[in-house]
Length: 571
Image 1 (spheres, rainbow, N blue to C red):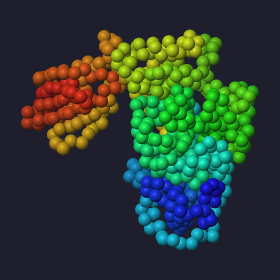
Image 2: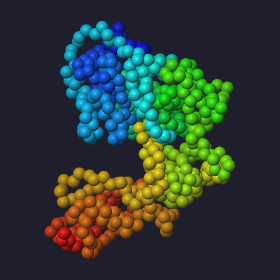
Image 3: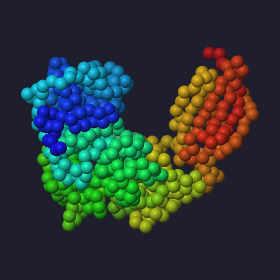
Image 4: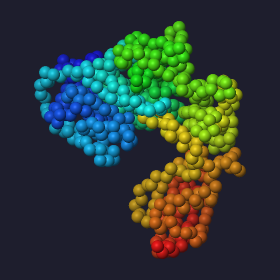
């Protein structure tokens, strides 16, 4: 049952439909919860509310309650200090995660856990006369800042309503009435549109969690009869590994993908096992602009006017933009729609030739070893550099052949479509790229990848029942610095480096910072290879000043021995 967003609290709508699942909320309860929270906001004269939610239904309740109370909503993209300080300008934080450290950093405003507040939602009551949401209610979102300083964008309820109504007419699975499961957060424009505005407009049911991993997304899909996925390409690309597709049994009514390039191979795979994704092109500034499901061309939505600047960059204008917005995306007009050629700031000139970083990424994603890729000038040498996430087949190739041969094979693959000067000279490999919630790679992460050598796993400490035993676990980086030299064609961790890892872990504790007298009973039983998950067990005997250690790769012991420490030095 379709209903405009500003009318979603109407008493005339069916009160028995499910607004949310797991646990279930009917529309009747949802509306009472919104009015209850709105009343509390009014009583405290809240003019601005900052939101941070993991639960999509609680998020929707908080947005509508704030709007109904006449308050502006701030949607920080994450709780990094800069964003927490921005949220700190609000009168109150509304959240379902009050344990977050950002809320206790002295930012000076109240924190309301609405899970606690909603325990007092009254039973059946009459609908207030002023149940409508004002068309000029505002939500403030932050752009990703991936190509410059992050900007604050203001979206009104009327703009979100117009966008959702346009999508309701365009989505090819509107009649399926699915449960909406998502890998993206509603705190960003993509999720705000597709996990908040559109489901409420369509009367779809919200699955509450954000399923950031392919495994949890598939598990959520298997839990309902019909689902609609709202996902990022980064998550969808990782579905190429062996999956139990039979468990879905036709449970996927539709897949929406936005936020980056979805390789054709991924779209084909999803079509084979579920449905072909409905891809969305847009941005925080513009909202949705165009869609595609077959072919390379994008078709603008009916209400969107598009054109080109003199430089060939797309502009867009619609009922959900504040006038005409000029993008930095270069396009090529087609008979029906347009092709995206890449951003102006992603077209670089080298030796008088234009090089498209987007095209290099697109071509790499067509290779059977690559799950994700990001391309930019090297932070020091300015030549093209590639940060590539390898899939299972790519990781196996690196283990068997070494990184140099993998890089050479990918470079040969690119040579079929790229000019010689565009071929990347610098490579970094990983099992996964650290894309943020907006599916972007930050400049800081890229610079770190190419300027700081990886010398050890990122260890995390594990719980141990014995207070004298310390346990750690980490995954061996694909680009560990020590895989070069005579280990280049069969990468493995040198034994001396395994011993150094133990020494570094021990140095986290006072007893482990002393000088080493000797190493006893040192044994190397099995190789440690790229992408191995390694566990380290350290058992310290304070009386003898000895550390017994063991490294395992999940299948067998790789290294073991004892380190004898010298006496504590006098201070």
